[in-house]
Image 1: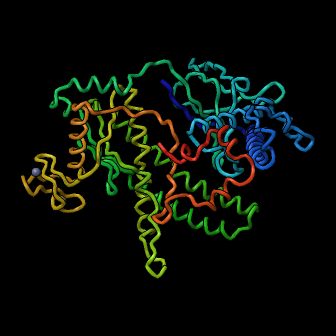
Image 2: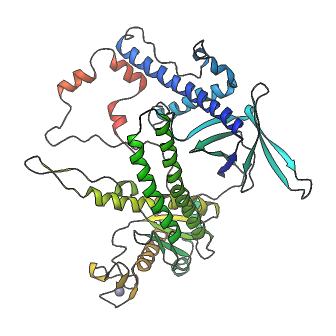
Length: 475
Ligand SMILES: [Zn+2]
């Protein structure tokens, strides 16, 4: 079973400045590879049509160390090589259609350096008084030592082959993934086991989770999860402060130290909210999975990405732009994304898999209008945001709780019908399909001459295996 770890790291100021240099040098090599690749691709398209030379997709980096870049010699060569390796890995993801081509990494925002096993080791330390066993992280080579880094391991961990040290708004992290060798049952095995249950039995062991805007998570077993009032209050205050600083930032000179300070301030203010949301997602998913009565956890299949899209721009007949409710939608989007809907679901999925439980998704339509007792579905059943009264059998309930029960029923039916299919691993990058207007059925001639003009574009495409159809079709 693969598990990810992220611990807080506490470097001294000297260690931090040294690590920042490592980060900068690795980014330099990565960006140099990106630029080199771009240059080769442009050059090959324009001029090398007869020669047939293409960008070398290798991990060579030594030619970037020149008299103009003497500072590259001051960091371990493995740091530089890892920059080239990261670029190569990003490129192979592109060929597998899992992402776009590698792009230039920015100097601002969160930064990270990837270290392989030559550059670090975990040293065992035994406390002389309590004889508790802990670990110390030694980073660096003999020529470029960084020393022992303090980190807070809030859980036991094994020793990985590579680690990532990152910094975001002045806070350092140590993160890595590792296989702990413990086997975990696959989703289809768990589904087979659960479908051997009788319907009543399975219903008693199922929890349906209704995701709503008023209450982020309401379960069929009566549990409800929301941020505490204190957290909500603090988030609102910090958001207001971040907006204030954003206005200040916009008035400060680009590239100046004061602008950088304002950006740092904003990042710190936003971090609180991010931390609270992540914590909420982990606590909620843990509570859902830790419930001993729950073996099957059912969510609605909500396309959160699609639900939180910006509304389309509206134009009247005369060409004037009309109101499209973008502001109101933005507020709704904030509350949907703020409720950590998807993060909580993702966390529940992997935690359930470890516990030998199953998470399924069911169709979301009418879950809030149907009666959980008799199945009568009508909009009038929902009296208000919170109140549910069935117009047919008179069943009354809290509306979110009723919806949670409907979701649980659907999950049980899905599993017992044998139609449940475990999710497949993501194979293809999702790309939005190009929209052709009603009056534009095909690509016009002009476009062909513009985009596929000079050069041996056809040969390039066939070598790159980038036919327009294969890139336009998304998974
Ligand atoms: Zn009813």
